[in-house]
Length: 210
Image: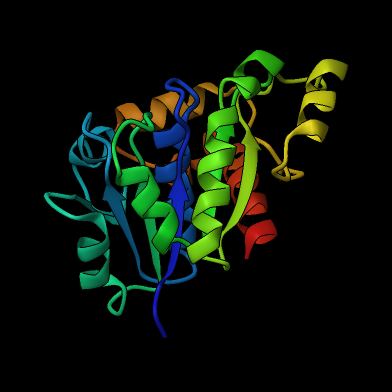
């Protein structure tokens, strides 16, 4: 059975795209064999994994694409259960469009403010175009960096309702453990008791999607 392909994308930088990619991949590794494809020229996913002194801290292989994304993904799609593509934060290259053509799911991390959500509006048109040739593509918004003990503002809820992409019911809170795990080249799954709340968040996202 070919791998299920997940793209993590947003044209806006600073939304936590790589953090979601790496922890999402680590969570999926509990369910099958996973490969992260670092399609971002900044190479953040590759840098993250290179910091791990032990493969057990981040038990997922990470590769950086050196050519056509579709061709690179095709090489691995039969050897893995899941592929996670960390897309570049721009629409100016063809990489994001190619990712959507081969993906089953696209996750769009956004910060919990209407302004940040509106900054991602151009992505909706790209997704709709991709659905013409890839009817299986399912997009979801993941609200990231929610403040503890605070709810989404009324304006944000209204903006989400107007967006033509469903938001997952489980978002990601602002937690220092996400930054700390990245500095150690690890995922939150390897951070013991400190990471338990974050692990639950990622697991809920995976359950909702799968």
